[in-house]
Length: 358
Ligand code: ASP
Image 1: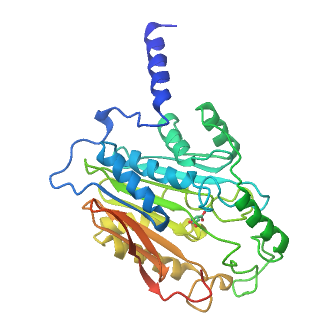
Image 2: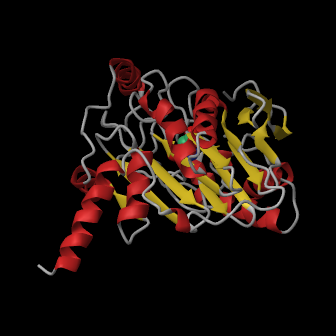
Image 3: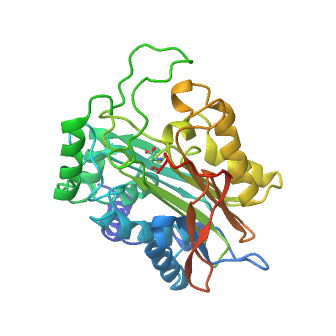
């Protein structure tokens, strides 16, 4: 082996040792110096991320870049057995197996990484980052994603807690029409499959975006996806442009809620592009809600001629440090840490929440 190649491999191995914990970017690639009047640091997330925004802010204040912060933040929720929508303790697919989705986007280098339907790995957000930093790909799925994680030393563990198993068992015992398999139907048919029964079927996810002290932007979305999904179902969370998007020149956006709606509407990239054209983060999030309402044409997904039978929530920030959020239905909130402490802030919305919707 030539000494150059040996040196390269030794350096690469040394970088890999610490790669689970810190960025392996040399400073020169981190996106330059702060802009005059750079607004950072700022961290926003879905409402389940109060602890996440605190952690992210702590990491960023200690000199971490935005991506270090948001990943450290969402790791708290991925590790929490009581959050049944993310990571360890997430509700399983219809076979009782937990399958996780996650993606990251790094503004300064405009790179992204993602994993979908990955089993047995508690922190898919870290694997997503590894895909970004240590492969030439953006998205790995299923067995391939697990093998990649294994190769990088991620420990495998059973992610199904007793609490999640009991909830799954109740669904299994009573499922009848409460699954995702549909018979042949027309756009007008209403009683096809059941509306999501509020307790048994639920969505849930954490999205987190941040601006660091250099004014650089990054984001992450991580989830166990739709509870009791058909095995292999992938939602919007690991899909760049749907469940999250960041552009260092403009801002960042992400979503929670019915992923199928975001997949068909490319919502997160739309929000960032609307901000580029001059909309505020809140206006852009509301526009994404309106776009979904306008495109929801199947009667089985609507309460009436207008109102969807599901909700989607958007979170966005621009590079000036303005943040905003919106959901189709009222009553949602987002978590924010702008340096003055972590707090929940109400989301804008299009319609009052119907009693039948969780
Ligand atoms: N958007 C996620 C998905 O569809 C779930 C959620 O946010 O609740 O997988």
